[in-house]
Length: 165
Image 1: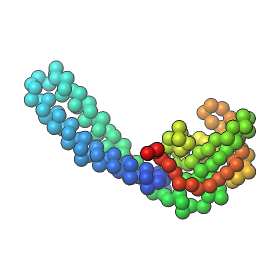
Image 2: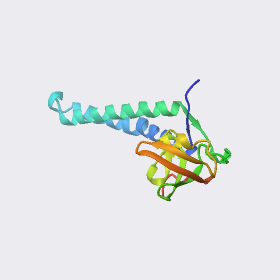
Image 3: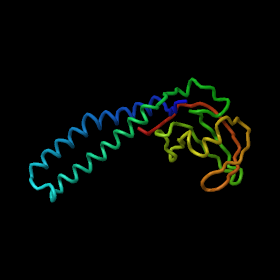
Image 4: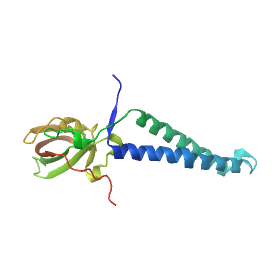
C-alpha cells in the first residue's frame, strides 16, 4: 500500500508556495549569483562563488524534500470527519492525572505541527496513542519524557489556527 501523508489544505498550500518560490525565484537568483561570482576569476579562492554554491545545494535539497512530501500528500478536511473519537484534525483537551493540569492539542499533519501552539503531528508519540480515544477514556501515554497518565476530557472539531495574524 502506498504511504500517504495527511495534511490540511493550509499545510499543502504552504508547502506548494515554498516550493514555487524556491524553484521560480530563489534558484534562478542563486544561479545568476554563481555566474557573477565566476567572473571574479580563480574559483579556488572565490568566497562569493563557494557561498553561492552552498546556498544552491541547500535550495536543491529543500526542493527535493518538499517535492517528496507533496508527492505523498493527502489533503484532508478535518471539518468533514467524525470527531466522536480522536482523529486527524481533532482538538483534544486532556487532564494530566498526575498534576491535574489541563492541556489542549490539535492533531495535524507532520509539516503543520507546532507544539508551542498546541498543534501536534499525527505521527507524534502522544497523537498515535490518542487516535481512537473518546471523552472519558483514561490511558497511560508512553512518551519520550516517561509515562504520563491522562484522561480525555473533550474531543471536538474546531477551526485550526495555524498562525497568529
